[in-house]
Amino acid sequence: MNRPVVATLGQEQADAAPAGGAVDGEARARALYDLERTTVFACRRDPRFSYCLYVPPAVGRGGEAPELVVAMHGTGRTFTAYRDAMAEFGRWNNCIVLAPLFPVGVLGDGNRNGYKYMQEGDIRYDRVLLAMVEEVGERYGCAFERFALFGYSGGGHFTHRFLILHPERLWAASVGAPGSVTLLDPERDWWVGVRNIGALFGRDLDLAAMRQVPVQMVVGAADLETWEITHQPGGRHWMEGANDAGRTRPERLASLRRSFEAAGIPVRFDLVPNTAHDGQRCLAPVKDFFAAVLRERRAAARQA
Image 1: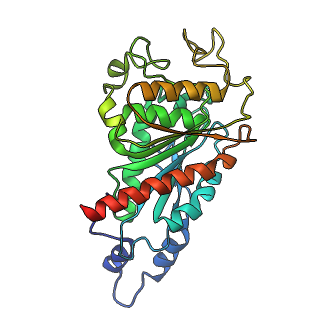
Image 2: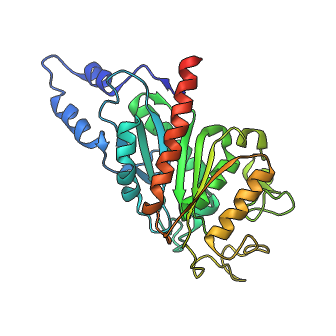
């Protein structure tokens, strides 16, 4: 579980307050912009990237430390919409919700997809997210050693690849409808497989750690359009085997499931009926999954 840090929002305000309570304006600003649906913050480590939060109003007032849930956007970058959709879950489950924004064309080339594959030029998006997590923990007096990660569409790309690289940082992962998948195939290079991840990322595949992370995969049963997900020779991310996992998103996610299960990683697979490519309509099973994992996680912590 997350270790509470000594300072909280309330303590920081009290420590900074001069006699007479002149900190009132700052306290009001923090309540307005730093709690519940927050403003948008630039990441200190790399201000090209930003994030918003949902923070339960009781955070910083003592009691049980919150958990952290990260909701990763897709290609449309609707990061505030995912934050808002997860806000009620965060409030009633005592979770801070972190919604990053990885903009299009960070390197000036219009690339919409760099974050999905974890590395773009000299940018390591996994490290950017970890910097955001550390920053949020410092702001709210929590040490988030582990967090839950959900992503849909382009966020589903990011989520399962982050899980492959950093399983020790996650207490749950929900992979929603990625257009392309990285199978746990030691005979193929990244991004189709994992043969060379040590050389690329400085981290070897840790299947034992991955088996400790509860994993969900979720996709709409009618999510069958292929125009955006079929790789063509000469494309930015083309490589041999790019389309081998299947034609549609459900087929590709089913291939990912089989790859995980063959490696001994259990997967909850949710095929949402009567649903095309719509992340908001796939959130109900994601919330159910995270809530169930949280119950077990907190019960185990109480018994420890």
